[in-house]
Amino acid sequence: MKQKKSELPRKPRVPVHATPQTHEIRIIGGQWKRTKLAVADKPGLRPTPDRVRETLFNWLGQDLTGWRCIDAFAGTGVLGFEAASRGAKEVTLVEQDTALVAQLKRVQTQLQASATQVVRGDGVAALKHVDPASMDAVFIDPPFDSVLFEGALQAAGRAVSLEGFVYLEAPVLWTDAQLEVAGLKVHRHLKAGAVHAHLLKRLA
Image 1 (cartoon, rainbow, N blue to C red):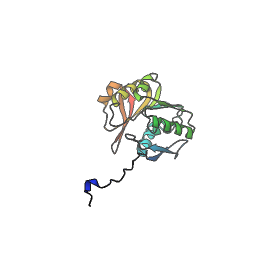
Image 2 (cartoon, rainbow, N blue to C red):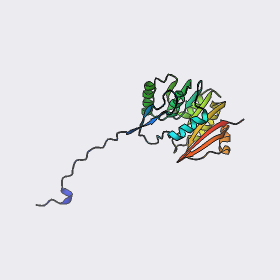
Image 3 (cartoon, helix red, strand yellow):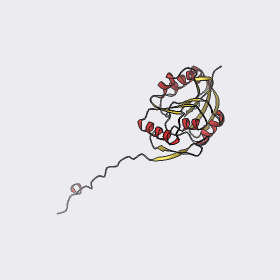
Image 4 (cartoon, rainbow, N blue to C red):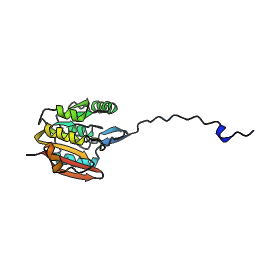
């Protein structure tokens, strides 16, 4: 007797495990120049492109000896590790995702990056706890679909020194009018693909 189609034995379903894929980025300057760092393939994780980082550190100057920096939404940590590679004396990398924190600590060990500190926590809260006007560079690169930009900029405007810089990576151009509430202004700007890279300074 012929089986009905609905009664045919079904093939067992093979469970699919989502294994995070990894790729690499490289540090482009300083003592760890050309060192490759593994990057986990996680939603929303978007390392700053090489071209943009190269421009950023041309803006900042290649030698950051003695600088105090905070990478408030570290992700891969490439901005913070790049700063440490160029001589920054103190770099705090703040990240909320547990797996990314573990990866940052692995990189820290790999590089023997004694000037860096990896902190698990909220980037905006971390900026609010920084001593006022104590940072030479503040890096702000939250997920593009987040609502963290305004709070992070206000906290960064308080944390950065008078002669220091705030780096903002965003999906749109931020104008001086929008930044005024944070006490900041656009010093340099670059658009690369979907990325708007801003170097900000405190208002006089």
